[in-house]
Amino acid sequence: MLCGLLLVAACQKPSAPSSSPDAGAAALPAAALPGPAGPFVEPPDERVPEKLLCVLAGQARDLPQAAEIARRAEKTGALAAGWPGIDQARAFVSGAEGFAVVAGKFARREFAEALAAALRRAELSPLIVERPYRHDRFTPAANDLDGPAAGRVLSGMSGAAVPLLTRPDRDSPTDGEAADGAFLEVTGRAPAEGEPYFRVQTDGGERYLPAARLLVEYNAFPSPHGTRALLGVPLGCREDGCRWDYWLVEKDFGKRRLLAAAAAALSHAFSSDGRLFAAAFSDGRLILMEDANTRELGQGCAPLFLPDGRLVFRRTGLGSQRDEVVLAAPPAYEPAVIFDLPGEPAYSKKVNRLPLPVLPHGRNLIAKFYRRVPLDGGTRLDLVTVLVSPDGKLLDRRTEPADR
Image (cartoon, rainbow, N blue to C red; front, top):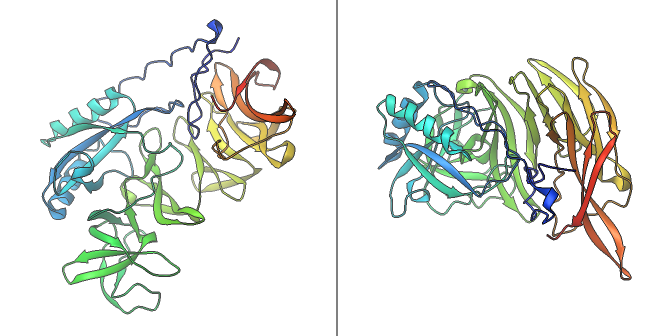
């Protein structure tokens, strides 16, 4: 029978576990404690955590002091690419003023404590703060400014300065520059049509920067060894939803590549050794990157690398929904469809429309599907969970109402 069913897709809120006695979930293996140096990157855990443990490298009364703490934290070598970030201190400590330097966030306490220990060895004063889980591991947070915040300048080219604007429009005259990688105080969003802007405070007074040039929030998704990361730069939210620029950056932001501009989502995966990177775009394309080489794998979404190096993902199946289970094995990584559940695919407003990743279960795979079935003259939405072999043989199947 299926086991491990408490594993929940990272882009899906968990449903209640079955009360069947043989539906008990096997515990995930304990994470190996990170070494004393870092960088500290938590191994994937497909369960959606109830809380996150944020490691603060320190708190500061003003942004220059916070930026100095961030520089000291970066020099420890313990931080993964894309960190640290600077946020309002009151977001972490009730009644606090000024800014907090966020060095990492984890679901497992042992990783938070290991990073805090490394920061203490560098004579910093870290603090571990529990916060409710805000968003999944594929989609960054959409920043809603409710007061002064901090943004990190992210130029289109490493080391290139970004012009500061005197008013928020494309033809605005410039007045000075913001250095790539510098932290600026963000006082709000600019009420401009078209390209979104942020108001920033500089020595010369209030200026403007395009939202695409400020990493506001610490939306970093690092590779397993922390040498590079996917960054989500929030551009803001409108009636048609939220948008981000997605960047792939190397350690210390030395190299960067814009993967998708103004995109609603970008599901992604790193291989266990961090060498390979897969990304699925909102138009349905799936790419596989190794160093400077990029391969198109056709249509696909929700990529995930298995421990043995195989890439598994979903692809449009019956009813134009994302249903097929596809495997691409090294070294050629040629995609091959191994499974597609018969029936009528169905999604509703109650169900997250993001595709559910396929999860490893030993050498086998667990996949979830939504299916509409007749019921008392109407229809019902079911969540079907299947266990399939590496060659696509159906080993087990369980069905439950999707609203559980």
